[in-house]
Amino acid sequence: MKRYVSIMAAVVAVGLTVTLTGCSSGGRGYATPTKTCGIPVKKDALLPLLPDGENVGEESAGSVTSDRGCDVIVDERVVLSVYEAYVDKLYDPMADLESYKFKHRKPIQRLPFAGKGAVGHTNAMISTKCGGPKVKYLLVDIDVDKAVNSDVKQRRKDMERFVEAYVPNAQKKLKCTA
Image (cartoon, rainbow, N blue to C red; front, side, top):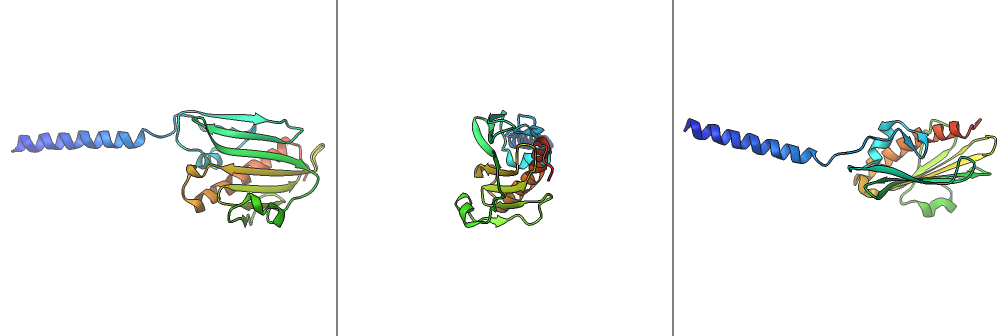
């Protein structure tokens, strides 16, 4: 009987080990980037917007002196899109003209920089003064793949944290004075 109990304990231990190993094997096979679209972003602000996968990369269009966009891709799927527009006025993300971009938009209340922001279920928009040599105002739009996190409330918080980290560094790169 003791031998039977020992064998069963070993079988359970092996089964548990295999189960736990299987649970952890999805994960991220890539290092979290330290930049998004050429802009430094803290890992804790970017990480929640990236799903598990093996490879992460970017595709960019534009330059520092013109509107530019960038897609962050995990395993051949676009999971985050960032678009910067260099404009002549401050656009209010809560204005009627911008409503088509959002599903259930709400204003971002406490931005750590001067400007206006709004967040929806899968996107966020920030508009801020730049006053730089070539850019009067900076408009940043992001879109996130909703499959990254099915918890809408958390995804909205994660997008807010990302734009709050991204925009000040984009302003620095553009040499904004505002």
